[in-house]
Figure 1 (cartoon, one colour):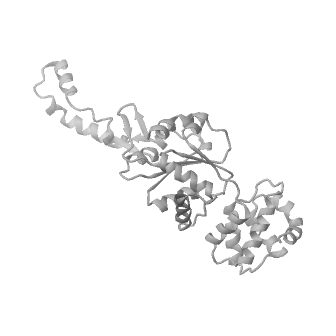
Figure 2 (cartoon, one colour; figure 1 turned 30 degrees about the vertical axis):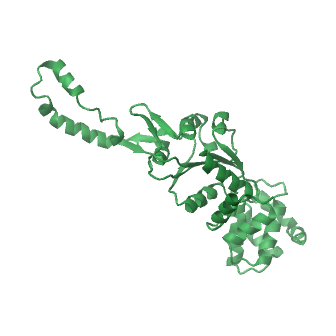
Figure 3 (tube, one colour; figure 1 turned 120 degrees about the horizontal axis):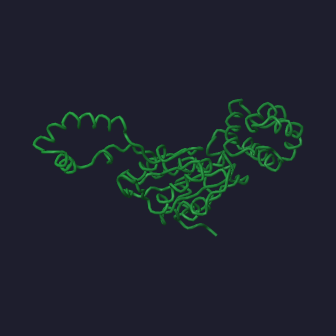
Length: 306
């Protein structure tokens, strides 16, 4: 069945940004936009999860705010911090003007009362240093917020995200609630190195991007390496597809297929040969034991390419 026109338009618009999307990817993106729901994108490394955010940001003309997750990430790096140097300057100015402000106050109680009449701006938005999560809420036009590799962050960090993912707002104890000026499109990526919480998953649409099938992978290579001859493109895609059926420590991802295609073009290659594959196999495979396992099979894999 042909996908709805809106999905077809998304596929075409993403293609103009160099991203070849499957129907399921475009459908999830369309629903996320319409429902204003975050997308949790899972799949093996190198299948285009982060690239989907880059292409969508370019397609929509939205600013891309990226938060790279890692172990130990906390709210001072992800959400906000205080401008401590500016606060110290404020204290100095306040000290210099204190005598003038308290002029005429009789006794400690009166002085304290007078100070209470001044706004407490020490912990206000004037001294707030926004990080990517808060910046995404403060932009006047909808941003694309990419929370990359959420599975690398600590389990506790997920709790910090729940309010933003559900209501596009955050609560800062000293200030109160800050609501998005324009709801961002949020994408989270995960390489499945650990299980994510049910609370986080409930707030997101789920999208799994697997290794592409041969036809889609050939289209991606054609889009990203347009000067690769058609015959060479089909040969290298077939070869990579066969590698993914082998018991390797790390299977080659689409990003490595593209790197291999670019390398072969640099070497002025028109077709694959045993020697050429052997000399460039390190572009595809990242572990010596995988290269040692594949090398004796290269000739057989090339014969089976048609």
